[in-house]
Length: 147
Image (tube, rainbow, N blue to C red; front, side, top):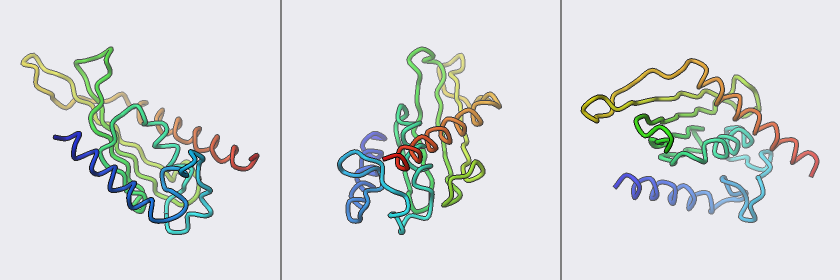
């Protein structure tokens, strides 16, 4: 049921995005949109796209391009089936800046009875994800400058 709801949310977001140019999740040809053309979007286009790229291995639960919030659903690493992760990313600025991004990672582990319980994440996890997103955003910006 969650998959159906998440799929419906993504479909709705894509449907809204298709009403305007450029496409919020990338152009229909697969190219990254030029953020200067996306006047209706108040978050940095490079950070938005880089976040989607970086977290693409996790199922997407919600994506609000106008508010700059991306929420993943729970992801279970096949190598660690007894733990799962979920991320929330806030894009806080229209500029490509390190402080224009906030990542929160939630972790749960199975207890002895097999129920999921909240567990702490390593302090470096959120910073590593932020750095990965920022690195990808810089790559996207450079590819647009060169191209």
